[in-house]
Image (cartoon, rainbow, N blue to C red; front, side, top):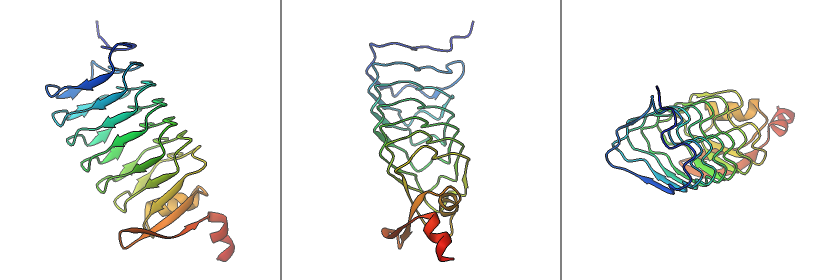
Length: 196
């Protein structure tokens, strides 16, 4: 019989560190889901793959450092981690998958690394306190509702990029990055439409 939840709902675990882990994936789907005592995770560089939903609903989780050898943040990995405040995303990540940080309502700022090319649907939907996300020019695909229900969000991006177009298409505030510095004005789509 498949063991889907190896530590699910274990309230005793509060930190997760292991240098011996290589793969957190099936049959460990939802492996640490609902570990409400978990407050900090350091995923070692030995980890090369993770399944969907691994840390879903770890509601007291505050800090995450991801492995430098992961290339995806899988579907709904941190969904409903409502106290998550700090995430270190390393430069080898290529894709932030469906709902990866959905409803992480304590996140306030996110910097997407330079090598990310895709942010999938609802990846950050419902991050209600998210005020700033820096999206590099490498991102060429942003899925539907990726930043839905992030009312105070300003997207910081480069001119002529998918991020700028996403902000315009979704009437989100955005600020253009120039010369690798955060400078320039904050734009609103309605204002741009009126000046055309």
